[in-house]
Length: 107
Image 1 (cartoon, one colour):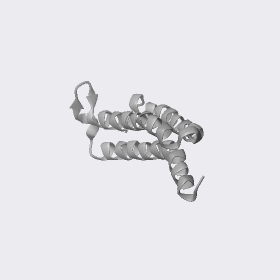
Image 2 (cartoon, rainbow, N blue to C red):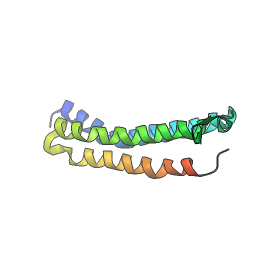
Image 3 (cartoon, rainbow, N blue to C red):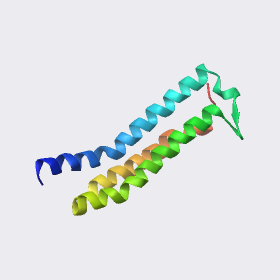
């Protein structure tokens, strides 16, 4: 594996945890903003604006991990096993760590 190939492999390897970290930070940042700006009193359909914003971040994070699985395999070929596992880890981490924000009481 060449130097640039190693960097590309590393980028793919940390993609899942990075997506989780960005999703986690964005969701909890939106939670704080929603509390400060009273988004809980604004309804979008059956949910508050705050829950809708967190739901979108939650879904975007999980979909990003799933969407990157095929390109990781095509880009890395037989070396894609661990980077693909990293994407699955990011998916599961996003699923479980952001789900409570959707059902727990807010503010």
